Image 1: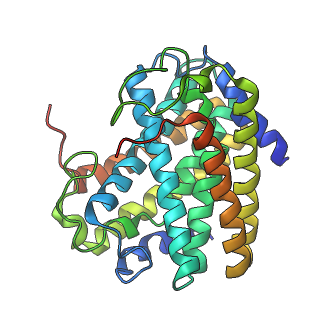
Image 2: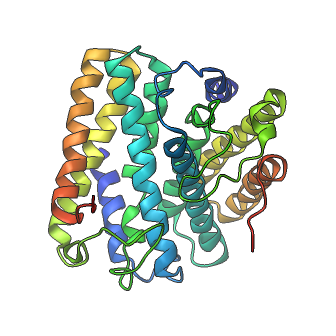
Image 3: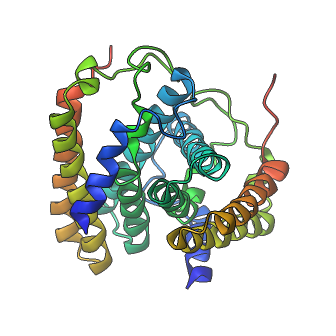
Length: 154
Length: 154
């Protein structure tokens, strides 16, 4: 089931003729940069919870957002023609993302798997287990960033 | 259950002493502007599906993102001190959002209720029913924007 979710999420990349194909590259880039921010917010919330006062509801909310976006068909935001351009800022996506389908599938499925597991663990309210799984989700984020994201200029 | 979700989402506004209270206003504003974009993306996807070729999986993905963000504790992004400032751009949040708790609660609960219902309808794959519920979600978005969002300068 989880596997199928990930497959559905990733195969959206192939759907360049999808319903959203008419969106302009600038809009697609803005949307994907926004998704990354929302995922960053969710990760920051969980980090604050596992390092500070633990609030089970907050962690569940953040995990659900990570899960929904991980399985949300993000691939449809990386259509041909959006390799270059600017949304909120210049795209940081490397050209390889648009050509290395096998690796994209791999990092996307890892992220989906770990985010799904985070939702499961968050429901238990076990802060230590959440902390451990949070680390795995962070590694999944990093796995994609290392491969497909241009480093931010400092 | 749905009601409780909404309450959990809304009461986060009161938690100015929450784990995320240390985030800078600029970051909070960037995050909330990003959430709005991600919701806009999800709405655009559903619109494209109900007006064009219907893809059940895409609609479910988009509905799940709307649901997860609607119940995601967005109130924690509107803490005291973030009334003014700039994230991706100047905040469009009206000052009333920070003072009119009763109305905020009302619009947030309406959005939560309609997004939850959208998830339920999306699972049926009934395009006509999704179109109708999509309209109700759009009204919920508008209900909040009309009350609490400064119009974009053209």
